[in-house]
Image (cartoon, rainbow, N blue to C red; front, top):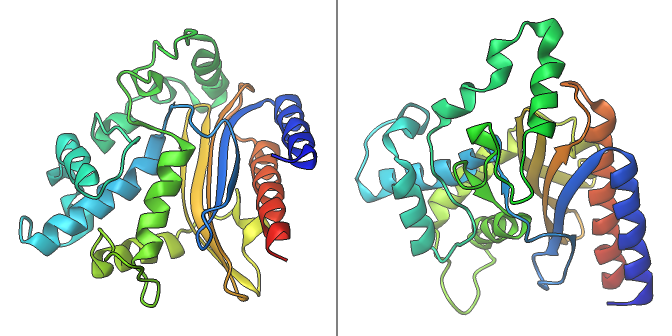
Length: 269
């Protein structure tokens, strides 16, 4: 790591701390494998990011003939242990699926009036342990669906490796038709106020999935530039601010991720 890169990472860590965010970031050049990150191997609850592996495995089960019908209606028919088993078949590690989507809808937020939602966020911030246990099951790394920035970048790389024209010496583990459908879901993501403003432009496309639960604010995706460069980006964060709406935190996540991408992109020039 160069002195300049060390200085950049130190500056970004301070910026995140000052902005009330604790974050795990990783950006990887999908052509060269070069990467840069901030604490990319820290395990965090992943909230609705779990929909990416869930969609992948459900579509793969349809392809294999295990299920018949529309994927959206069948998510409930793919149990957590089956998601993990198929991910392992694909050589993907670091994402633990322990509960269904229904549990994500049963948090302390539902117990408060809208005017008191900040109390649920205060509980999320204050009720954790040094070992990342938590009174709220969806925030406890031993009970929640969890992952790391690195694990999600690995998943994104596997999905994008299955694109036509990107085959290497070995065939992709994920069937190209399945990968194409997951990429399509991500390209049509409607929540684009977090990392999207920093990666979507006339000369690039941004495909992603966001995740949010109490003080968790996540997004993972792939930016494809018109010049052929392609980067996988994973940002998993916890906010230290007891508030539901935090546009400043969303903007900060995008700014830090973009500066990491810019650092990698500068090495390509």
